[in-house]
Length: 255
Image (cartoon, rainbow, N blue to C red; front, side, top):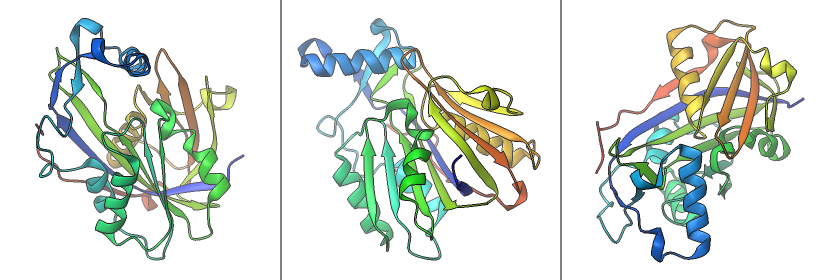
């Protein structure tokens, strides 16, 4: 059993349209394999796939960044604590993204970045947090910036979820997490929030908490499910009224 609790959630969601026709035919074998994996995970047929425009194709310098927006919504902690940045497949280098956050927020604690966790980044991350969690707690930023989008939709959703996590008891007690299908206890959860991306379940949980549809004592299951992989995290609502929620104000669309 994990010994962690979530006490605050900050979210940011951007509609992103800077995608262009996919050109994996000239890419390396490893890039083509990665493209196939993500398209399959997100359910995008190859004939309708678009790829994210690179910094060389468009000027992204003035566009808002979901990780920055979500972390700003959550706010800085009262005491110094580590910042963990979890990204599925980064748009730029992990070092650049994390360094920008640390400098921009004048982050006082340590920082570390983790990438290429794909859709499982928002669930199995609790195994990592349980191992490295300091007494002061930690701030974890989970980002989903899809490299591929469906041309029939015209773009994709860039998302970020900022979690403030502490050891021991708290408003949302994390009970367990894992890869694959949920165990029997998790299957009996009163609330189930799932999607194909690492942030999807968290965004739905945020909305449910904001709407007041979750009661104290109820178990909550967060899932990430695709044809390629599945991960889950089981929590119990201990004090719903104490969970601090913050949604970032964002433009209607970017690109």
